[in-house]
Image (tube, rainbow, N blue to C red; front, side, top):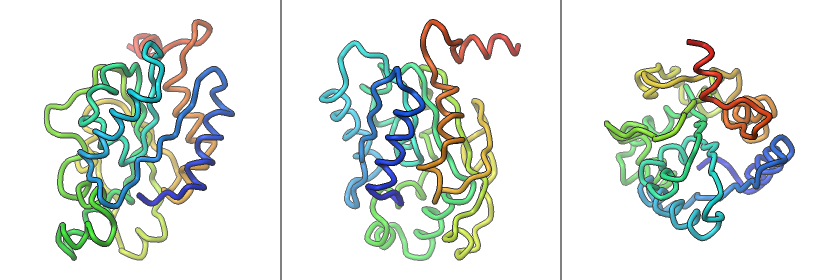
Length: 206
């Protein structure tokens, strides 16, 4: 919910520049009055109306988009790979605000989705993606996190106890325009006969 239109446009341009063989979309799912579940339903409707029916789908999801995936079953069913961007500091904000203001107060101040993010685990217990998944984890505090004196969240708090992840020395203020993050994400999502897939790399490590 912290991104603005300019950051969304910059992120989309960065993805297009680094992944020329793909059709890149950056749907703006932000809404003060739409919760995490509603965001998932919105993404399902958007995907059905926008994406070619037979096209393979690969997702780079920032915090809110990633949290909404369990509630977008149609989109998830056709997805071949997911990279989620998580944050050791910024994800503490949705937990801090409801503790001070309650869920209703948090929803009024920062929106329903942010209030939802602080009220439950990132993904519901038992939810599993049916495709390869990787997380890129921001490790630097934003100015807001410093002001609120938030401590970094651990793997268990972030729900990183299963699956793989990489840490990046970046904070949420800069993530939408980060070339290193985009390269790391596309390395995990890259497709094409001339490029090895995520599954091939993982098998080679075992």
